[in-house]
Amino acid sequence: MVEGQSSEAVEQFRLRLDDRLDPALRRSSELGFIGTMPIADQIDHALGFVAILEEELGGPPSSVIDLGTGGGVPGLVLACCWPDTRVVMMDASERRTTFLLEVLESWTATHRGEVMRGRAEDLGRRDDLREAFEAVTSRSFGLPAATAECGSSFLGIGGLMVVSEPPDTPAGDRWPEGGLAILGLTTVETRRPTGRYGYQVLRKTSHLDGRYPRRVGVPVKRPAF
Image (cartoon, rainbow, N blue to C red; front, side):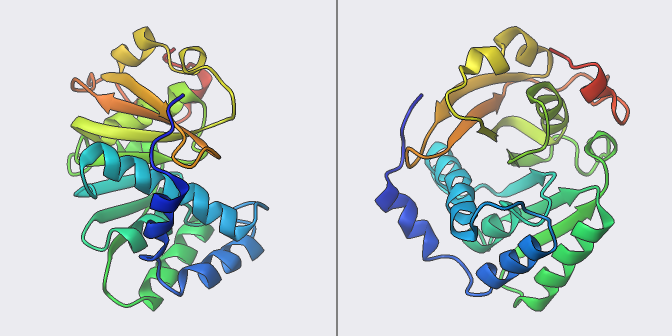
């Protein structure tokens, strides 16, 4: 477990946030889209993705897709912090994606946030999306194997995937190197930018085999590792 950016450094990212983010997330919480964690903590957790990717890449990624973005965490936070980055918020729910579209349309056009409705297994086979992103984020998409299989379908060679991790869980138990290799991925390290939340960092090292991602539901029912 590696601690990277300090709390003070992560605090600097907070200065980039739009004043309309907090009320948007509060509304998302009221609608039941982002759970019961306090909004301030949800933002802190989302800023961990920002800190890790900027440190690993030397700055903001050119493009990022947030798997199962739900009510916009970390997607909306990423869009605030990276106005010049293509930020795609992907979710299968019509209610959640409609809400996110309304939020983005109410904001000024100073960001490149997009909302994409659909299942990752299907979207990951689209020519314009497959291996097209420099970064992938996942807060609560699913089990490691399903997250890796679906996430790898969007991630370009050399790109990074950052996945929120439960506390005190050995990376080797959840992210076995042999299983990841099947999906063109390798572990980088487990990070705690502020010492509070954990994130697993993965790198795309080879193209994803054309068999993946498998059809909807299969990555969960028959995990690749």
